[in-house]
Image (cartoon, rainbow, N blue to C red):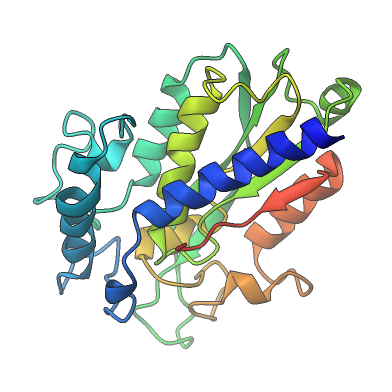
Length: 256
């Protein structure tokens, strides 16, 4: 039991440290930038420049090979119309596909649709874009099915990111955690299994806003207030994950 607690605590610390390492309290009051339309202020660039100048290029023992910091993957940072400082949906999906499957299994378990917020509810807002909802499971041996994961008789640890999608540090750090877990670089999969929903609020990341636009006629619903109402499709998907896997522990990283 002590060893299990030690391993779980290690994962909590790792996620927390990586999330904290790309956060600056001085930036917390900066305004949000829409991600999905042309950026009209420089909030994201301020964060990106802070990450790079003060943290990323000073850390030598971590390879930040995630899309937003990889020029070969995220090469249109300054010219694309989407928010250029947050990993896009397409980049995230390609990143998951690129990870080795030695200790990883994943699948798309649902989808959510975001609505156009440029018009009022009359006429009704129209569906704008659909987002696939991936779920990734890390274990030894690698399995995805909840029953098979439970049959390994190891504690199941659950993490999701992007509840508040204009707080990107948590969900960007999760990509790095997934990269390390896919090869068990942290040496914890002998003791526990890890289930990760890399993005809870998929369309919020697209808009780069706190909440979701997946509820027709209602804009920017706070996903951190939807745990009992199940108003959004994301919350219902997360509820199905938790009911299926019944994790012993969980973590919801925000911006710190």
